[in-house]
Length: 228
Image (cartoon, rainbow, N blue to C red):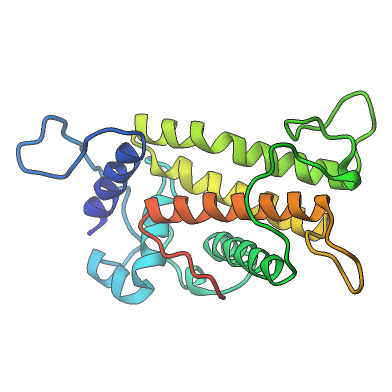
């Protein structure tokens, strides 16, 4: 199973970049998988039986090629110390924000220009401007913009270098950036507050973050649950 997990993920990454790729006998490109070794007493079949498909995929794909996969029970714990849980939790939070925004009548979709008075030191591309002291909202928003903007290049590099671990690490980074953004920037109005252009922009960022996280998890062969 471990070699098939890795090669299958590389094929999905290559396809995401427009390449024609498949695992077939006598293929033109041979991908040599050299296992770094599993934890003592853990066989490939036991790994999937004990952790399930999602956690097993993460255990095998998250480490760099030269690192030993960690397959301990912590991969199943729903707490912040578990990177896989954090990524999936961030996706579930993003989807919840979008659903709640729809109930409040905040339209979905990416606006042509980011508008957020609480992050006024942001430029039009979402990066913090050096001419002023960035606010906490601006810093958090800029970090999320950067993570989302880096995603296409990360996918390209992961496919070109046959390195799924690059995508896994980027999902961790994106999840952290999103969770900090939604904590500091308050995407939805409170109480009698009316929805504004800022709320629409923040909801759009949440929607974009959810799309990146779900797409990345799918490429790794991992489910992205809408509720945790």
